[in-house]
Image 1 (cartoon, one colour):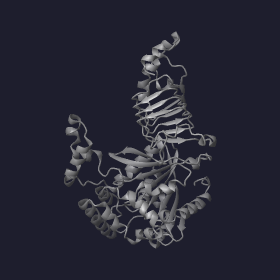
Image 2 (cartoon, rainbow, N blue to C red; image 1 turned 90 degrees about the vertical axis):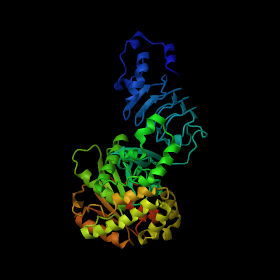
Image 3 (spheres, helix red, strand yellow; image 1 turned 180 degrees about the vertical axis):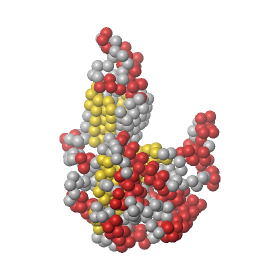
Image 4 (cartoon, rainbow, N blue to C red; image 1 turned 90 degrees about the horizontal axis):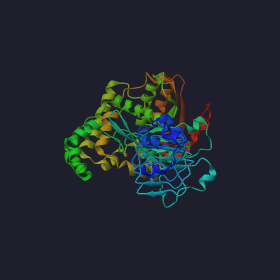
Length: 488
């Protein structure tokens, strides 16, 4: 229904005398013509806000931007969402009977216990839309036509901007909603290792009954390896974008031509720590979590240590880190001479990547290292799976990652470990002797405030080498802690 059709509605004098609708007024049942005409302004200001308990069946949402908002018990009968931006919107117990989504944006749009009878979809991608029914009876009778709802992915891909960089985040909603205990609802944020990818964690995410967020770190996947400011300068975006309009083919070809002149400006290690910390704070604020857990593997674990330390220094925070899970993680290199030698080693990898721009050849060499070669021998199918999406990394992105996140530039954490005030769980493969020794050292430094899980028959990548054993061990360990019995 268009705004012009609103004049056909029967409106009382009392309705017509109402003042403009504010955000707080959105919960009212009866909306006047004047209210409806100003509603677009109110909702455009409603990003990351909440609208509940109202009937918006006679309103035109065409072209509105409602990202990161939450609608609870709202009626949308016969509503047309034409070109509407509904990215990251949560609809909880809403009624969409006879509504239409026409060229709408539904990236990570979540429908929880919604009525979707006779919904029509045209020119709208449903690949990352999430339909979630808490009641088992609804799971057997989905409300969207199968022709309209045809996608196989169980995750959504989201983008977050933090301190000048865009980050790519993969999101899996909780697949098991039968247990509503706080620990089961608490999200788990995953950080991969060097050259890794958020999709490394997909099999793990599918086994956990909780929300999962896997971050592609600096230079990995589609996460930026240069700040937006640096990138815009390299591409001369500000000079010609608005005059000529954006042409994707032209932009890509110009980027290739200018790659020889691309700035190799890498952020400092602690800058990246602040970026990822800010990203986690955005996720918990936007998705309304008061607590969360973090699991980091290797390089991701080292980042997680620094992030946990920063969270421990803040007394007033909106969300609390409860448990830090560190898989095959080092504390950093204490001796400056050894750290300098590692910087040289990291720089060799970085230089080769930057100048050759050959990700595939680099991965072949990288995966031949003893720590990593074991995975191909022990679980070749898994090794093939993870290499498939790792080959999509931009070589220069990985070069910047080595410059910013290598062990040679990481400030060691030995002196700060005891100041981390969340629960610490260190996980190692039993055959990974170097990192078993590091875990034992961490246990001493933390003064006993740490649990060590050893996975038999595994090396440096226990979560990839033996996933079922990894999940079983982790579950058993966490079940012994109070308020952790439903972690997995």
